[in-house]
Amino acid sequence: MTPLERLRARVGRLGTRLCLGIDPHPDQLPHELSRDVAGIESFARGLLEAAAEHAIAVKINVAFFEAFGSAGVAALERVRGDVPAEQFVVLDAKRGDIGITAERYAEALFARLRADAVTLSPYLGGDAIEPFLRYPDRVVYVLARTSNPSAGDLQDLEVGNAPLHESVARWVVGRWPNEERVGLVVGATAADELRRIRRAVPNPGFLVPGVGAQGGDLAAAVEACDGALAPGLVSVSRAIASASAGSDWRQAAAASAKALADRMQEVSATLPI
Amino acid sequence: MTPLERLRARVGRLGTRLCLGIDPHPDQLPHELSRDVAGIESFARGLLEAAAEHAIAVKINVAFFEAFGSAGVAALERVRGDVPAEQFVVLDAKRGDIGITAERYAEALFARLRADAVTLSPYLGGDAIEPFLRYPDRVVYVLARTSNPSAGDLQDLEVGNAPLHESVARWVVGRWPNEERVGLVVGATAADELRRIRRAVPNPGFLVPGVGAQGGDLAAAVEACDGALAPGLVSVSRAIASASAGSDWRQAAAASAKALADRMQEVSATLPI
View (cartoon, rainbow over the protein chains, first blue to last red):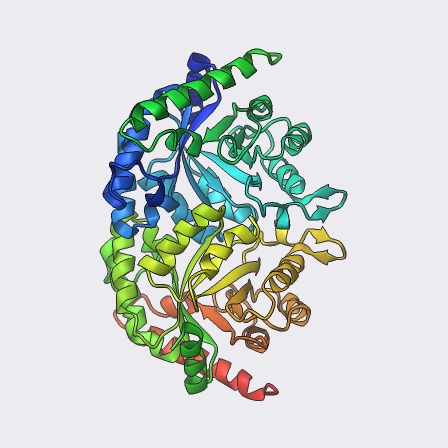
């Protein structure tokens, strides 16, 4: 099965859009874990074991491992190796560099770490994305509108009569038309924007961060994430990872993931097929 | 001495703007080196030993080490430890992510790898840059106009009456006015653009890639790289690294670096002080 076939199989089985986000910060670990690379590895593995069964995908943010240097990257390699084979694994890396360098990042993320999908920045244009698409069946999510407070600094600049992030979304779709392997990152923190971008580009699958701790609108995220070409993902990190800092953190994470998955399933059930 | 004091001391002593770029690709190593992580580590160390003395700074591209996973990052840690203490070390990583993630990337690049400076993407706005500036005295170079063929896909979109990359340059300068620690990446492949951006933002130091193998204009790069607040860098990678693939690669790299440094010194000597 290709990565997207696996993703579709999980969507069909679970009926939710929940993507489990893994961003282990040493200051936000359960009390029983050490504030070091061993602690973040244990936490990441514990979250996967407890909560991934409720999600259609897992998104691991590489920065939280890179912060511990080569020992952190070695921990990421082990954690990635432990993800069950039926999962769709997104490595959130937001890379963006010239062609020959992009080829090296693709080697790191697709060949070494065996990501099914990665997040990429559009700022350097097509050269920065093409080397990733040379890996058959792998998926990329190109940043359009992100969920952080300063996202609008650049992404909302007016280009023609639309904000830059909409130009980026249209550029991506124009450059790789009918390519199910090219999705977009569109944050959930502005529900109106999410709906507007979906109307502008009906085809690509969206990876939607920002639901949960960042305050994004869960229903709007679920309504907008699926594209005509590929299923969408709604990523939640802190609301699951920080459900409890006590010794019950695994159970609390599982319960939080289950509740979020169920809410997303309910929203999906109300949508026209 | 702070990193910028060290950079200024080297500019004063050498009178050039040459920054030695280290981007070791396994397919472009001298014949005597193995096409693996040991080969790229030996090559990077050999280039530093042979050519760094002619340069005011060293720019290491992290992707070429990350491509070998945790073993590659461990090699990068060793190579970085071997850079002479008087050098100004730029880690070319082009990171750009939301605040909490940017803080982790800053930990990786500034705390673990002890970079003096890093390259960053502007696409996520100020949140993605601020965590790096919390490290006292460290320097960031924000991408404005890059040197790759598809740079214009986004960077040349019209915003108001100017291309996006000029808006980015003006935004950076408006957001961190009179901050010598915030520079810009401006590619040398379009000399007219380089001059136009310099006129638009006279203050920041530029990191100018694209001279040498990418065909950028050396004189235009040297003329434009210095800002009123900070000295600029003109980065050359392949023209030095690929000067010879034979057993004389160290000597050839040293000679190429020396020739480039001298040409840049000559251009500098003709400029008004």
